[in-house]
Amino acid sequence: MTGAWYDPLTKSSPLPLWFQLAERLRGAIADGVFKSGEALPSEAKLNETFGISRATSRAALDALEQDGLVVRRSGKGSIVLATRVDQPANEMLGFADDMHRRGLKPSYETLSAGKVRATPEVAEAFGVRAGSPVFQSRRLLKADDVPIGCAVSWLSPALLKGRKPPSESELREGSLYAWLANHCQVRIAGAKEFIEAAIVEDEMAAALQFPKGSAVLIVRRRSHQGDGSPVEYVVLHFRADRYRFHLESGTSA
Image 1 (tube, rainbow, N blue to C red):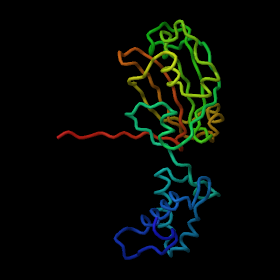
Image 2 (cartoon, helix red, strand yellow; image 1 turned 180 degrees about the horizontal axis):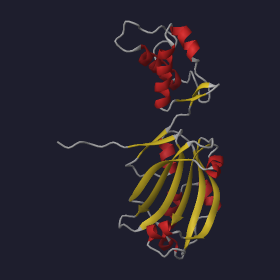
Image 3 (cartoon, one colour; image 1 turned 45 degrees about the vertical axis):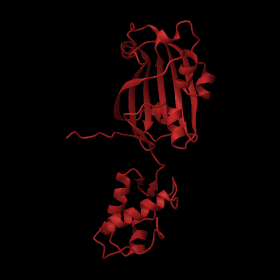
Image 4 (tube, rainbow, N blue to C red; image 1 turned 135 degrees about the vertical axis):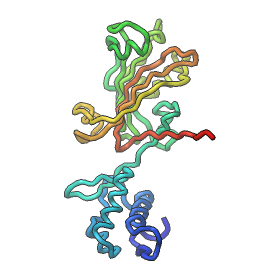
């Protein structure tokens, strides 16, 4: 950002004042002037600093909230949110690889790992009978030591025949996809997934250190090898304030 965020706005510019102010604040957030968890100047302070109306400052702050940069809280003002992680919806990456690529340190907290009975949903994903024993792990996913998501993962029984499943320590110390490659010589070639939004449940809110009633993104994914045989079925919950998916599509002539 060139200049200080509080420099006078250009009232002769064809750009609306609210847009100019939003861009100033957006740049200040990007430059670290206002850090995650801090409050932006109040509407009254912005009005005084720039000589603008309350409607103008409110429109600028509303724009930042719509972009997911701040959250408006009664009595506290506009609080800067942590930068969201953007995950291309059409790109198949494990959590660790995705975080490393973005300059973030991935880590895991294993909540449980062991044999469970396959639910109808899991059984359908693997082509086995409901109630069949399958390996399940539940892990908290962290970026720079901050919880960002929770993964409940099941592995195809066919992959673990004659093999010892990953231990809690192995799941805590590294990527599940790396374990599959090293121990099962399996590489994921693709996946089919569904993404939806929901309100976080109490238990999940506590695990993600997220206020009750907040929004989460839920991903249900069945991954497969090159020959189409199933590898993993996973249900992921991501904090909507820290993670989002984006999809790019081309147009045909």
